[in-house]
Image 1 (cartoon, rainbow, N blue to C red):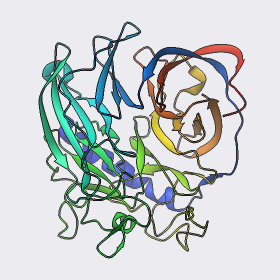
Image 2: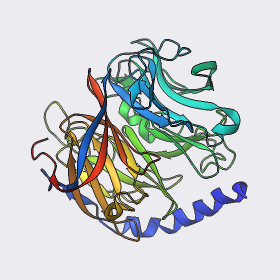
Image 3: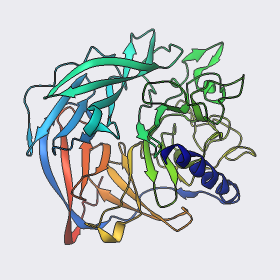
Image 4: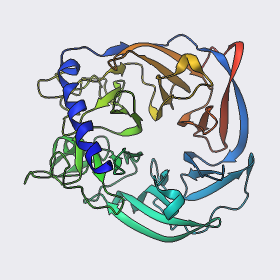
Length: 396
């Protein structure tokens, strides 16, 4: 049955294109109202720039730390010893050990998947690896995919992973960095509009790292076979929406212009040719257009940057009032933005769950509660629980 599922998803997504092109994004300038009805419970501290988390069937939580460590939380306690089996990563700037995800058939194959930055300051790239979980250790670490070109510096690795219903894997890759970083005689960020490269893309691969033959640009002689969508700056949030059979992505803008996008295979998301973002150095417009024919507009734009990282769609019943809503982690805003969606997937409202620390990842746990990782040198794992008549802090 699985081999027939992906084409059906493609058809459903394609039907949504017209509605997307004819509507305008919800633009947010400044702060938004604070959300009520939850309390924060600190579970674990002492994590060094944690980046991602995943639950094992045993209930253990695996957490990546950007410097290159994998940690285990058992029964609410952080194991003081990192997991063996992680090789050296390129730990600089935004690079390091980044996302983690378990294979959909983990109970049969015990496979974990990771994204990480590899290389040196002058030559580095985003990589994907798999390893086998074996009694608390990693074995058979294997790099199954690497971005095909090197870049310089420590910016824009992207690096979220998302399994689709057909058990193919989405991988987000950043555009390579801000000016003055260059490639092929121009700003490297322009590679996001070049389908022949992996930079500034969401890629779709099989669990062995190869490109599926039904990828939207697989038959093109002018595109990399792994490309699923292009025109992205730096996607650090991916979530699957089973109700609408679609994928959502949260994406960093530059100076303002952060985006929430509904992802449609084979489409162009505009960066840097159509964007609300401005240049860091002088505040000038990066592009003349905020929308352009043939490019997909975002659903939400944050003109006051939140620096989005981590994204989930809430589907449990512990917070019944939030079922079907999207939750976007904010590094700069130090909160989580809850996005109300209507039946067609249009954003209709927004509130802020104040955390007071940089939010790197946000996930729904097996217990239906919401778990948050904070990106600090002494980072925390926080659980959000229902609580009546409690308002989160007013200041980020």
